[in-house]
Amino acid sequence: MDELPLRCLLIARQGPEDREERIQDHLLELAELARSCGFAVQSRRILKRSEIASKTFYGSGQLEALAAEVSRQGVTHLICDDELRGSQVNAIEKLTGLICLDRTGLILSIFEQRAQTREAKAQVELARCEYELPRLKGAWTHLERQGGGVGLRGGPGETQIEVDRRMVRTRISQLKRELAHLEQVRKTQREGRPKGLPRVALVGYTNAGKTSLLKALTGEGEPRDLLFATLDTTTRKAWLGQDFNPETGEGSLEPKHCLVADTVGFIRKLPHQLVAAFRSTLGEVRTADALLVVADAAHPDLEDHLKVVGATLREIGCEPEGIEAQPRLLVLNQVDRLHRPQKLALRKQHPGAVQACAIEDLGLDEIRLWLRGLIPGPAKPRELEAWELPESIPAQ
Image (cartoon, rainbow, N blue to C red; front, side):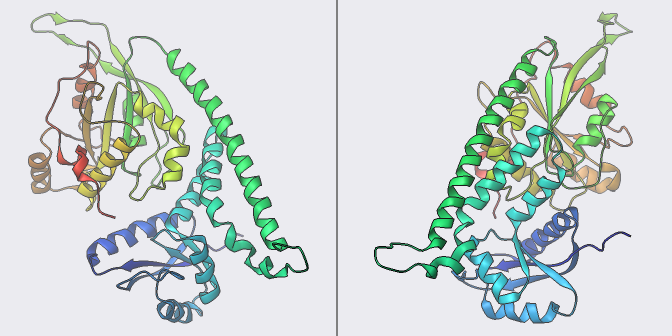
């Protein structure tokens, strides 16, 4: 008999400067994250508060009222869209009687469920350790007053905290050494790949259809309608067709190929611990010859998603311009869900993008044509769009 999913309540703070529509969008995404982690979302609430409470982040009265409201609904978890300190999580749990997770903790839990390979598991464990290290103090406050006696400077609670911190720091060092070794292995694998084949990385917001595009281009991949379905980089060979014009006889009959790598998706407020821990995996993006930036054309937050992708690419070292800038092609996926006026508006806003549908093979010929242009050399420079520029960092 299958166990029923745990019920959760989602909350987010709205300050005086925050638009309610933006907070609602964040809560909708948080709901998708919660479902991806196996929770059943009971309800979502916005807590309006002008200032952040140092102890509980949200207002204690607001939290108590929510806890009383959901106490008879079987809710066991409170998931917050904001990043909380460990002491704030502990205070909220004591006040409400609910298990509390912040956004970073929820994303880490999803990554822990998805990790399959040795490298992915080590990366997620490293991110978890670095996330938990500053939060260890609150776990032992019940022992802090057990010290006493002449000549004692601290109680067993303080001792236990230091023991735990030392153990976590030791584990962090071990994981970093292991990941450095795995990064060297990955580098050796990249160097051993066939010469002359362009290496292209699929990047984009999570669940935008990158794996679907990988399957359409290479015939391999297992698309799933889940946030962060892909954690491990998958590289496959794609057939690009021939550069031969039968009317003029120009070109070559020899088929052209490239290597396409599917990578972990991005998301707003992506925990910095995960960005750092997944450095070797994201190295496939930094060292690729070109990037296919995949976006869900039908998503209402398309432009915001593109800004998040642009900011994250810069964070991992992929600059949009300069000598080492990689050619980029924006692929607006899932245009089959749009009406003609919407497609025309997108064409006007993103004239250099390819409108595609990976499932129905729409736009693939245009993508292959662009990829074939990489083989004799890099693609021609193009005018950068607003989402790629440094000033387009998204508002949190």
